[in-house]
Length: 406
Ligand code: TYD
Ligand code: MG
View (spheres, protein in one colour):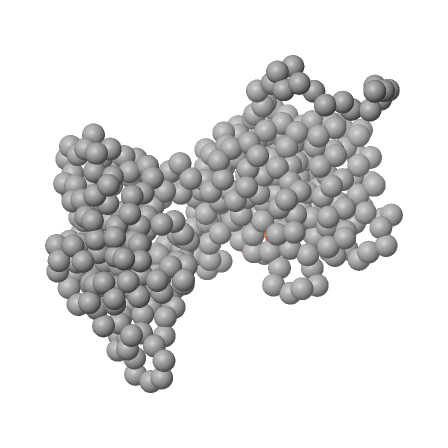
C-alpha cells in the first residue's frame, strides 16, 4: 500500500473532532434556524420568491457582522449606489462592510483572495458567471459550477458564505432547489408579498435541526424580529365564530399556536371543491374522508375551504385533530370554546395517534392562556407533568372527540 499524497482511510477513533466555530448574526430568529449562529466555513443558501426580502435581511445581517469582522457583499443585481440607499434606509453604517458589484466569478475570487473576508455574500447565484464555462448566466450548468466554486472558497479559506437564490417560476433560470444537495444549509423565506410577516425556515442543515423557523416582520426600516409568533397567529381571531380551531404545532424545536379555519358549504354545482391555504391538500382530503366514514359527517356534497392563518405553512401529523375539529365545527355550525386547543394525529380508522414533544406543546398553550387542550390518550402519561393550570382531555378516537365537543 502506498501513502504518497493519497488520502487514506482513517480510524474513526483517531479522528480528532473540533466544535464548530459559530458567530451570532445578532438576530435570534436567524441564529436559531442556523442551529445557533453562522458556522465558520459553511455555505448557506437563502432561497425565496423575488421581492420577499432576501437582500434586505442579508444587508441587515452584514451590518451587524461588520461591526467586528470583515464582510464582502457581492451584488450582481444592484449598483453600489442602490445598496447604499438601502443601507441608509436600514441605518447601516458599519466600518468593515465592503460592497462589490460584480458577476464575474474570477474577479470575485481574486477579491476574496486579497481581502480574505470573514463573510462573503453572493446576491444572487443566478446572476453570477463562471467565464470559462460555455453556458448562459442563470443556467443549471452555471449555477451549479458557481456554487461548487463557492463551496471551495468556504471550505479552503474558512469563509462563511451566504448565497441568495431566487425561486423562479419560469424554466429558463435555474432555481435554488437544484443546489440544495450541494450546500451545508438551506433556508427558505416564506410569506406572502402583500403581508408583512415573513417566516424563515431551515429545510436542510448539516449543523443543526432542519425545519426550525424564525419569524420577521417587514417594516419601513427593514425586517424586525417577531419573538412570539403564536401571539401574531392568534391575533385576529373572531370570537364566537364557527369553523375555527387552534392547534399547537411544532416547527423545529419551537411550539407555535395557529388558528386553523374551515368553511364548509353545500356544493352548488358539479363536483365538491376542496382548497387549502397553508395546509397540505392530501392531508385535508384524508381527514375529510375519515370524518365522513368514522365520524358520520356527510361531506361528499360539501365544498370545503381550509386555511392556516397568518401566512404560515403547516405540515406535521399533530395538526390533524384541529383540522378535523375546524371542519366539523363549520359543518355543524357550532363554535369551539375560545380557550380550547387541539393536538393529535388521525389514523384511517379514526384513532387519535400519539405525537412528539407533547410537554412543550402544552406548556406553550398554557403560556398563551389556553384553558383546555385535547390530546391523544397515548400521550397522557407525559402530559400530566404539565397539567397545572390547564385541563387535559385525552381522546382515543375522532368519534369520541366529536361527541365530547358537539
Ligand atoms: P428585497 O430584500 O429586495 O427582496 P429580494 O432580495 O428577496 O428580492 O425586498 C424588497 C421588498 O422589501 C420591497 O418590496 C420593498 C420592501 N422593503 C421594505 O418594506 N422595507 C425596507 O426597509 C426595505 C429595505 C425593503
Ligand atoms: Mg434582492
